[in-house]
Length: 475
Image (cartoon, rainbow, N blue to C red; front, side, top):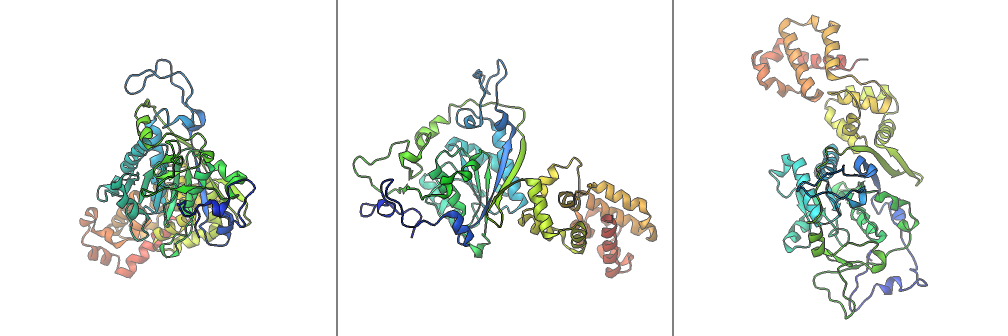
């Protein structure tokens, strides 16, 4: 069995699907049915809306591109970006959002980023490298551009190998839209308008494989180009599509050779499925060199929405904040329950990782809070239970003003204040970690064993940490 029976000289996929409106397959197995039966991975769609995509871009009178060439007086819309005009700031914002998502979830989650054309993919790769230079300095292939060039074959093989961790992010235009077995792909990013329903189905198919041994049970689609409207079309989960995968060794009969409008990165699409299809790969490269490049002051994410199927199979669309709130309340229905779990958890980062994997987008919600330097506890309390967040400074000041420290010696008070400074700059796990006593600011207070002994011993020192933590998060 195969999703797209191969077209060969001996066998035609017409034998499977028929060659006319009157001929229909005897049986179809839809994506929806496959997900419900547990054979295919479910997905959620993160819809990212940029202000420039919603409002468009119109040059002011006399405005030029970065080379001094006057810009046409017109409104450039989303469909124009990276096709006939290049906005570097937009690419940077998209690359940052992709990178932030991976940092919030899993930086080694296999990711495919689909771009408008090859030059756009080149720019996106550079922008992603800049956003992830802490990893790319050591792991040069952490981000790789995938083309039909022979030099990329090994990188593609490594990307699709479930047991290879690098490359993590594959940037492409169309090479990976079909015929590539990406069993562990967890994030599919669309920064390209996909006009063909055939291709759209194939792109979504890059993430539908299930690999339980690799913890691949679902995937996320991050859409910057409003392709999500195709999910609502009856054709999306309807009849199968006819598509030919063409390799280097395949040959065509006379009169069957695809033209540039049909052939791209090794895939041949039927003419009927290629609405507004772009040029072939060589034309694609040249077309990208003539675009005006425009420096705009700012591009912002206006909002994000999440689409997912509920337990009844209904499509639900909510904001990122509402989606996170629903998932947090599903785990901990009441604030008191959440607070108790938080205080009982010794290593808070383990709880945070679990919440993120369960769809609580902590960092995104943090960006919507007006206050800066807010504790993770306050972000979660704000998300799930509409509690007014306190800054870390406010929490520290409450302890200093409460009189709690009065029961300690001045020497011990100084140590606690240093610990609170560490909490201010880092997080609560750093505050409770013994290794912090090796930091330079603690040296003047003595060696770690001496500091611990000054509180009465390890037991008493740990009791102090527990008490201070309780005081920090007290109502």
